[in-house]
Length: 210
Image (cartoon, one colour):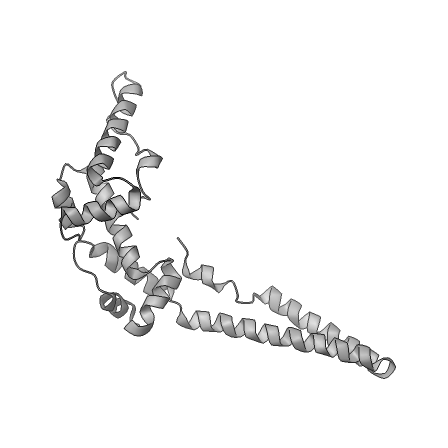
């Protein structure tokens, strides 16, 4: 997933700024030396310097605009925590914008900059991740799990789960248990008894819930 820092690539570093100043100084000094001897060469050098200066101004303006629109680290942390603590209920964009203390009109764009996806998509993904965790670690029914992670019913969970992972939650849960059971039977403990726990197979579980 992209973070807020990924969108600051256009911001000039201190080294880049120093290099730019050095390059501009060289070009201007060159133009000064050429001015009396070769007017055309001096003009070409100044044109180059002018073009570089315009590009640098645009780059810095673009970077400054990104910083103004992006969420600060504390806002990202508060939004992430709010979503984590409220997955069982309804989460509106207006709720998230209030947590971040940003206007609703600009929040969605800022959220996507910081999290790499729209608020709704991010919330759905987190609901699915928690549902997977509960399917593995509890004996709760799919209906109970669906309601506990904020889906309206089991059908809602099944539809979005299938869309995201290519199979229904019942099939996924059964396949995981079968694979984990086989692995436990094949891997004896140091005392010769079957292992009681096994890490989820990487190809059958989405990213772990943070």
